[in-house]
Amino acid sequence: MDVQRAITGLNQCLAIEYATMIQYLQNSMLIQGLEREYLAGLFRERAKDEMGHAARLGDKIVALGGSLPLSRR
Image (cartoon, rainbow, N blue to C red; front, side):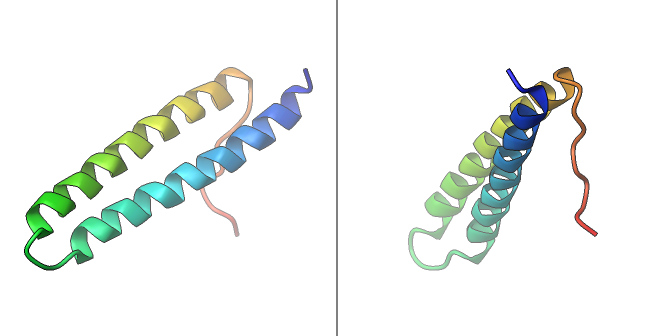
């Protein structure tokens, strides 16, 4: 197994998890209407799920000897 290639792929997955988590959280804040309370809670739960996925990916990346990108400058 090419470890660096695996780390690169996992980092790409991690970026998607981060983006998805932010989108769910943003949706929970912006939702309006009669079902707002229910849907806001649903979106926040989904955001927590994505955070869990991100944590598992991050742990695996570090276990493989990789590093987590904090920002792209």
